[in-house]
Image 1 (spheres, rainbow, N blue to C red):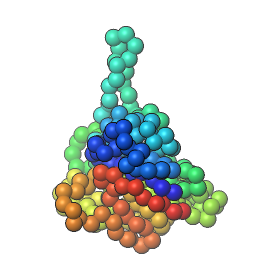
Image 2 (cartoon, rainbow, N blue to C red):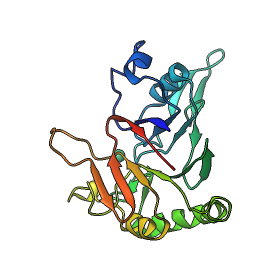
Image 3 (cartoon, rainbow, N blue to C red):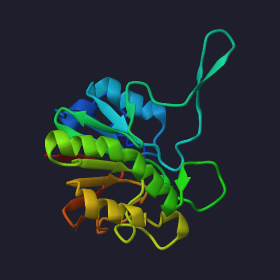
Length: 214
Ligand SMILES: [Zn+2]
């Protein structure tokens, strides 16, 4: 399946009327977090394919849109896309799961988790993963995350340290892909794809078009 995967930065190439010429035919849209809802919604409406997302650590802010009369409506999710945090789904034969947020680095109420809390999030995925294993013979194909795993594409500062629990997750459930954002790239020579165990770990910042196979 050909997937348009986006993360962290509004990319002018995608946020414009020529998006379909630039991207070509895709089967699904995946978002790895820290993106404004209007951007996800624009891409969903233009590409018109199933879309799945997780929030980044900055994803808890409300977005406001004008409502009826003088009222302002709070919008807590992008329209037309499914939040995959602690959920699994079958997207046309591709088994997806999602884990939002980053490592906890301050007291803000944003989506930040200690490694222990992320393990608890992973536990919530277990029923769906076990169902996949029984039904399809594998736990999952793609983990959509915001943060990278510990030691893979992450950075030494606290806010950009990856999750150790993601390493255990890959050891045990062996997804073919772990897609993440959160680590912004400023040079051309930074590593964005690393094989760990049986998983291709890919930093998709700011967007990538990937052929994802079950
Ligand atoms: Zn982030």
